[in-house]
Length: 379
Length: 196
Image (cartoon, rainbow over all chains, first blue to last red; front, side):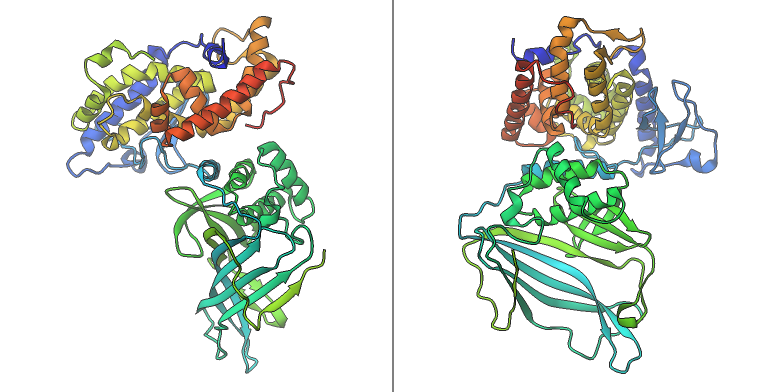
């Protein structure tokens, strides 16, 4: 007898659902048939008529009430108290339909946890980018940033939303230089500001980082350190907790911030991203924004956590594939800043962040520009 | 797994197709598959949640039946794919159920007639088995249980979960290996590996 036989025997005495077990579902379905028939003609469902009319709430099979769900759709409380999307009838003629858009085998994600689990599945199916010694990891991204520029006449400052293209080359072999290449490609004044008279375009800006360390210094994670992180969920969580302990703030936020950074840096290693999403799905305080746009303008859905009363940090995922798109910070209420003694307000809704465009192996790193800034990183 | 006798009369695909104009035809699909789907859900989540899973699965299936590919006569992969998503939203309940069993040896499926403890012999096998199930990644567990408890083929699981057959094989192999290790090592502390 092998493990599959043992599994088949496990709780094999659990009976099939009886007529009584299935009666509630059968009734709900029967109402759905009726609703479907009534919805024909114009093939639209008449939704929520009874709720809007204030008709009394129907008692469910188990005597528990039918009540409105989070989405405004009626839901039924089952014996276990678990909620089920359902249809309901509040009168002989008032028919209510379910307005859920469903793909066979793929219900729309209902929660932040759901999105993260699907993202973990998507990441697990992605291929790793592996480098040979001497190669470079080339990461392409675009960033949405804000820039404050003091006015020449001393009347205050202008605040710009910048789009910055970024290319990064990280070596597969320790001791070689990195290159970060940035270029501002667009600027939009925030409300109340104007484009500064000084040119905001600086052309291509190269930064070269050099170190003689055997591992990449500074960052928690870079390509050189990707292999150090475990992919087992429990071990990964323990490692994240250790790293997060060095940061400030509430425990959950520290974990979320650490995970977000790791996700952003682990683009080349989806085998690590998948358990990162699984660890994130267990955090209290995360919530779903079903309509989000990343820094590259791609529509997605975001899972995030409030960093404080005016800022929310998010991971953005593709709506269809659940692949990771990028990170965002969203200003959730007007935020007052005082850089250099100038006071100004960053309006609610301002978004900054980075969108990942691509990751690939490169045989060489481009030659840095002659005027590149160079930074030697001590070990 | 053998099909109920009724399926030889009219295939699921035909019932679903007809239900586009005659919604009540969908009841035959429900009658054919709901009892077993309830059992599958009860084994994973317990009988209370099973009722909810059945309702949610069939309502979702009914609402999206116009997208059903009638080239597939048997609707089980489609239905169990939806059910897998419904169950995944209750992943924590599933983990709690497994953990409770590993801790107490009480069969959580039995609720109406009072709690029933498994025999010592049964527990010797079941405890490490359930601990191993709890330690699997959800996507691996889905594949394993769709094959072991529902009887779907590799191709059907691939269709249910919308993944390549090769992925089904790799997930199944990974899951079987872990379960086999758990059974081989009966000295394993039951709480080990319960990370859900």
